[in-house]
Length: 81
Image (cartoon, rainbow, N blue to C red; front, top):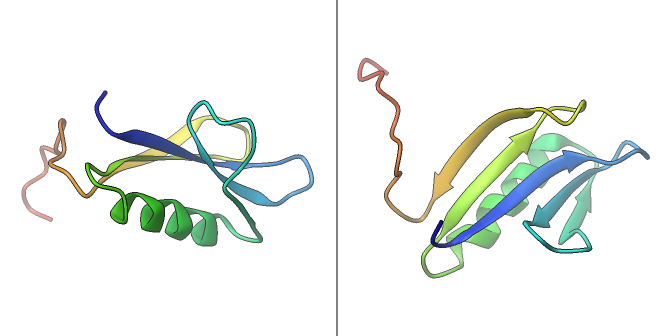
């Protein structure tokens, strides 16, 4: 996949991390999932070519993903919203 993926996950200590895929350390730690998601989105908005923000639930399952700063390769089919 061109670009970069950033994952928003919860750590065992309860903090939320914004981490680039394949990185050993998080790019930032936040008190809420929304703050971590905003930080991940900002990282990709500033990066040429953008990427994908992958948001995980507290149990680790993928909850959602958002394409940032590039055309979405798999856009939603719902055209009413």
